[in-house]
Image 1 (cartoon, rainbow, N blue to C red):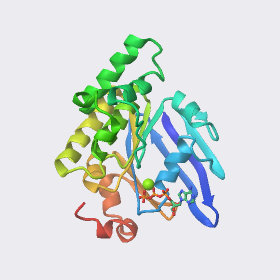
Image 2: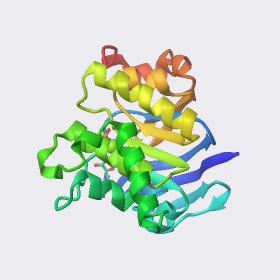
Image 3: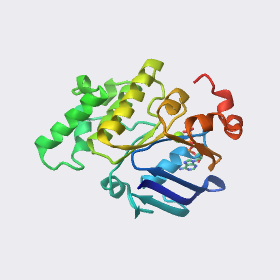
Image 4: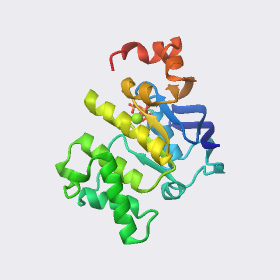
Length: 241
Ligand SMILES: Nc1ncnc2c1ncn2[C@@H]1O[C@H](COP(=O)(O)OP(=O)(O)OP(=O)(O)O)[C@@H](O)[C@H]1O
Ligand SMILES: [Mg+2]
């Protein structure tokens, strides 16, 4: 069963072809990494899946349903949660309140929602920050709060846009273990965009490579790492990251 299928997705911004005829699929239970140079179209692809941007051409299918053109709240209702590359914290709210907003997407009962929020905060390691405000947190902490808020919505498909950017290697490894738990213990399918190869290659079942808006390669982490087109377009300068 496919969690996500993209068929012939194209998107132009004026004269710029951000995505050109992108086809890809993510199976239920997979962790798929989406990589590629700056400006390759990765975040645009996330925005199209989550309803923030309309594609010019092509179809988006979620769990067998054509959802092309639906609004972000309609996509969220279908079990898709995402974190943003540039965090947009809810500034007047505490961490707890922020995560609770996520929980209320699916839990109308207050006690259940509070419990969901607490489980998500504990899993992501932000429980000790629950009474702090967004302005008091650094970027890695804000990303963890976003992850907690996303998990509190009880997603079937979790989309992470550069969740480990700015983390130390030890923190990256902790995030690797956390995302594995989210998949293995909660059964969540994961699509992640990332430049940190230590993370992508350790966690992904499959990696898709975008370059100038086109898929140039796809395969296991080792297949993609040794693909000459990928090395030339992207990995050549990134061996240490
Ligand atoms: N709303 C927009 N209007 C105009 N151009 C845009 C818009 N959003 C993205 N672009 C352009 O589309 C291209 C793809 O951008 P996108 O943000 O999807 O890249 P990315 O792969 O996520 O890059 P990065 O790794 O730097 O985050 C870039 O050239 C970008 O400048
Ligand atoms: Mg991006």
